[in-house]
Image 1: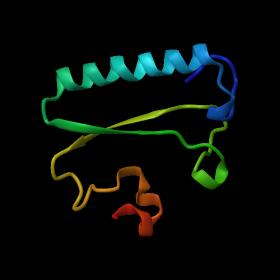
Image 2: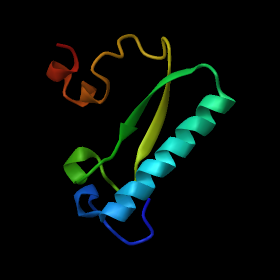
Image 3: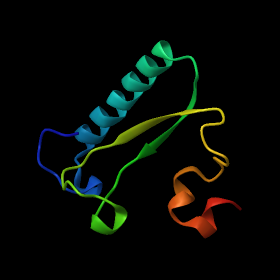
Length: 87
């Protein structure tokens, strides 16, 4: 989450994007170190009300995933559009 108020991911400056990427990497490493059951991650950003954004300040979600945590993980974040989840 950037310190500067920015509501949309597309409006971030490159140094802010770089900082978010570095933060995701550090958090990923920390989660993997603490929890060996984590087998993958989803990374998500809600940009706009119709995409589910309710707080209009950019933030990124790092979602740890485990083998078998959902019936069919194929398609990942595409699951918000059911017909595009599996192909």
